[in-house]
Length: 176
Picture 1 (cartoon, rainbow, N blue to C red):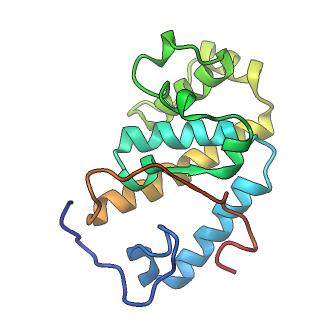
Picture 2 (cartoon, rainbow, N blue to C red):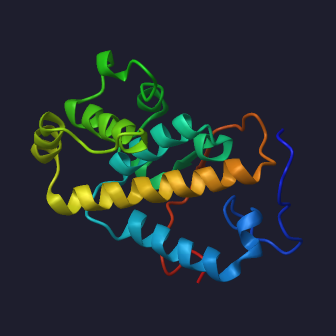
């Protein structure tokens, strides 16, 4: 386990996010949970696609908590552990669909030092996603990256955790 830089407060919630050091900033945590719940449960993009991007980000950022969580909605939409196992380096030659590979390529581009897509990637994305879906996917990636990096930077995470299926974040039930 990495040494925590900021310990969670004594009073904290039961889910991994509200049980974290973020609970020191209850208004920020509440705003995050509202945005996160809205993104996951009230968007136009399917949850399995968002989960692909979230898990690829978790593996890239190396957030043990994010790597271990699976959201129930994505599971119900068919995102099995066998598919999750394909979200690794070398996914280009995996059995994932062209749409799923496009999400992972976009995630890698987003997380890179050069996050602007080229013309070929732009065409690929528009072949698989509507503009509204791309906006939602990009907003999701920003949240996934930012908050997983917060968790890693604050420290105190174990090296690994068992995979756990959790309810899909929703608003107003998330932190309301």
